[in-house]
Length: 423
Image (cartoon, rainbow, N blue to C red; front, side, top):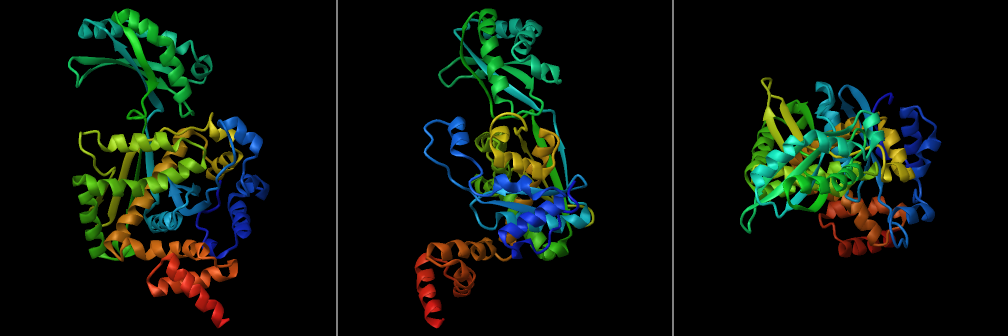
């Protein structure tokens, strides 16, 4: 287990020195981090993962520090191209440490397949017949994946929904609820859906059409909570303004969209780093945000009885430790190793914790100095590189850009010329 996630001064080290510090904190051989260097994936490995491979794109992987999740020190890999995300999440995790860090809970790893049935003359009668045959359907589904059943997973329940159709009448949709254990679950669930569709159609007196999982994994939820003293955030007024700003995201979908994007800045970065399906997690999160018919913030901000800020987050979390890129991509395996998780549920909880920390950081910045101040300070380094600055010139040019207040490439090019003339 990590000795501590409080790696002060990490940003001042070189990339190789950071890997050394990380290995020491995790008490592992630095060779375990080797897949995270370079491309991390050979052309032969890439060729086996997708079609028509011509190369690959590198995304920076940073380490979020300071996290305590359910009492455990956690170092979190984050793959993102956006400046300030890793630093912001780490900063809020540091502020949350005095009050115990971040606590999380999760529900069972239940995913659902949908089987759409057409040409059903008696939808209500069909619904009753299908529910009467639930044991048969569950047995047939479980025959498709005996290994999953062996480890304690498998189909658990059959549900039938009659969904009003915009064309008139109703859609007859059967939901097969499956415990997918430590997998994300798409392949297992889809295979079961294909297998039971014909029999369901026979029972209903119709024919099957769509047979696929839903990414609205609202039976597979994860929740996170953190508390921070007002003084750490900048004082009582900052906290009051954070509450007011966060409330707008609950009430206004225009604000909620950007508010939730900030949450996903943290979540998607960890999901991507660990080789999980960013699109599935994002689709589930955003659809869950609109579950009452109006798109709202996924998180909530309050004060507790002592006056501390309390932020909570709940959303679906379909991530796994087996199958897909999590197993086939060497860098993803190395990233999972850094988290030291032992189950998909534990990984999902860490992902949610990072999303909440990132969200609190964004809301605090908006309520205090403004989002651009910290973000543009880090973005200035990217602009400096784009302007042609050499490695030894980047920091000086970035500092000059921030001081100028115009973090733009044309300004960077002018300032770079001036810096070189002064040398």
